[in-house]
Length: 145
Image (cartoon, rainbow, N blue to C red; front, side):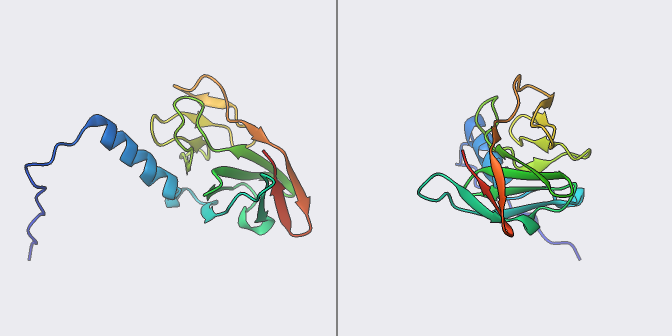
């Protein structure tokens, strides 16, 4: 038994900007679940500008996007953490998904970045993600930026 397909109202005008903006919002809410090792969590920036997150959130070889703080944490090797400002240097969308090879990807224009260094793997971005200082304090990571 087939279901009828929903039809969008004919009176709605969809602009290119609305579609692109919506795509960034959707991308920023989660990471591609088929890639393994990535995750999305919520985090807030403290009054001093730091973000505190549990180290166990990010598996070895994986990356975690923290919405609310717009920070990405990667753990390329056990015990070695790298943090980035998730803002894509191309046009300011949030780099919040992973590509098939594990690279960090901006969902707006598909710029890809190395999860260990933040360097550009493929454009249109011409510069890498901003690296943020990260330190281990007990079971937490403290990211400053």
